[in-house]
Amino acid sequence: MSHDHNHSHDHAPTHDPSDTEALDGSIFGDEQPCFGCSPSNPYGMKLKPVREGREISVKYIAPTEFQGPAGVMHGGLVTTLADEIAGWVVIGVRKQFGFTGAIEARLLKPVRIGVEIQGRGTIVSENARTVKIDVRLRQSGAEVYRGLFSFVILDEAGTEKVMGMQLPEAWRKYARAKVV
Image (cartoon, rainbow, N blue to C red):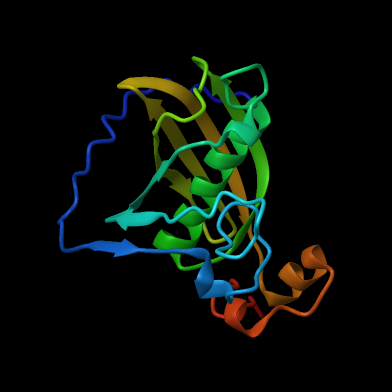
């Protein structure tokens, strides 16, 4: 995938403050297992995204268990954080559920353990079946990560096939409508 997304996004909130909504993984049930957002996964990030207009923001502090090199968050877990933000853009803005289809990641600076990370995700293009999301992470005033995520939006049957199980009831309203 060759896509230059060095375009400048200020990422300062440009929405009506009344158009803000706190989100969390409990919308999919208290016992859902997601590593990024489940409130009950003992190993997870327990993220609590916030929808601000058509953007999602997250604040997170990585624990020592998430280190790669000493003092630095593991690059795969940095990308996991960004992927979770992108997924919440699909859920919070589109009111749908999607699956990550492609990731283009740029780790610009080390992401420090124990220092707050501010993440922001925005849709850059979309259609009925795919959404491309720009995700930026900042720490201590500097951009540390930039990613472009492509999400595939499936209908209920497609989602069940990917998950290998019947879609839980709390998830049904986020499936793409079946095109007949």
